[in-house]
Image 1: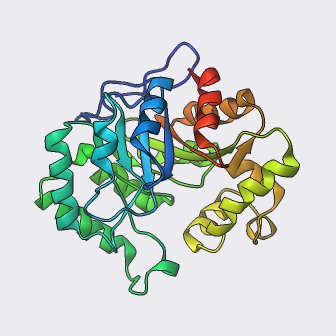
Image 2: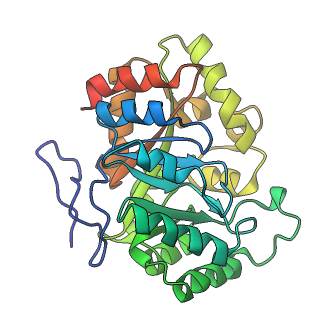
Length: 294
């Protein structure tokens, strides 16, 4: 099933992203925040503004206790984890949580899983095999392929996401990576691209805000290796990150300029963009951006 194209040349939402994809309502733009960073009142506003999904970062525990209050507060929003860390969230417990949530809110939850980082895990060995074992355990527990996705950057894990899940949830990437990921995933798999934004037209203040978030990831080899593959130099990826790198990974400027940058992911083949607003008042940022996105 080839991606549908809307009149603006952007891949449109289909009734499913693959032959057996059952998640409906995943529009073009959602909001990414730390899993404790959303409140029920906030997400009501986000849904009214037109955002179609919430992405919960920061490795929520296997119990997934933050998911249901957000689903309860909204009518149609999709909630996805981005991501559950396979080292810290046992597959059996995570599967039980999935089924609990799915029973109450059918089709509105995506279980995003990922391998984390060797810098954060003392027992980090054979990460690919650990992912495969985790997916096997989810299979055994009846978690459907079409409602789970995989954090993936490099070709091998992108192929695993294509073959064993609905698709991929790349983080800290560019539209170039989205284009390359789509080629590997093929036309049918789900591709959700995360991107950070700073609603600030002054580079002198916008860049420090973006750098404050991006710099943390420059100490993690998975991300740094991917950025090198995308053509960033050793000088770019050395802490605290070059202006060129920060401008690419944390879009800043007017709402129109940011919207244009986010739309590049859709043009490159993403089904959906998970927008991570940086700054003190994220809700105002998302309200201002909604006026030009929708």
